[in-house]
Length: 303
Image (tube, rainbow, N blue to C red; front, side, top):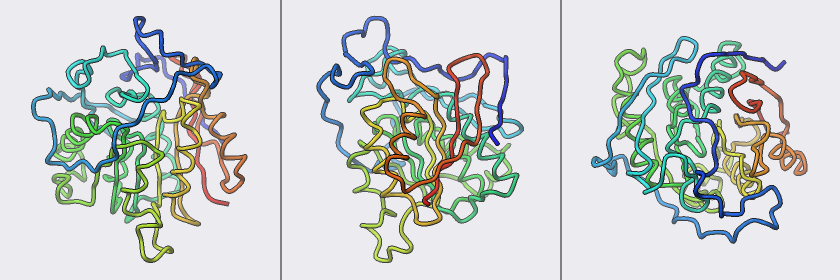
């Protein structure tokens, strides 16, 4: 049964905004035929923890999620990308420096499923796609995951935000598991940048990179606010199928039911899944807090 949450408090995250008022000429509409020519994506690379940009100011603030406190980093989009904080430019910057509300929805849903005994991250491999701050992946790490791999479109997001944010959370002594996890150089944590159409070539647990196919794949794939663009849905789904462990892997994703102006959303993505016919979906939570479009969290598993 889906849980319906209500919260009138001011959100501590950014609401979805595609472009600033001065960036109206990209032609991103619901009709793919009206969209602008695609921009070549940046190269796929593994980003090392040592590659953190020390020149970029990184501040943190706490986020309380029904009893668990995580740290949320903040950096300046202008400083990193030369863009105003409201800009999102397809092919260059996909909003990874902002904390979207779906990340928090996802963590709350995961906590509920852990408490009810449906899932456990203990000893599991986890991949977070479109990670940004990486809070769901960090949560999985604190819940005992054996490996957590973070992916984002931009290497700059990983260097300037994801890695510093992970290290801040690992050094946060108020978290009960932080004493066992000191920094991301000493645990099975990796960071990968690149487009969903190609980044699987770098991911170590994809079947083509593992001698024993029965041991291939990630036990959990987590993603939040990744299904906003209708043009990227098929590539995203193809990547999920390559990365998810069969037959026991689980995908959790959180997103808005519909993203105005770009045509994506949970139901558009589920239509891609249902057309393929190899995965079963179930609604975990529906959030109608009045601060944005209806949001949902879904669980997908191979049939």
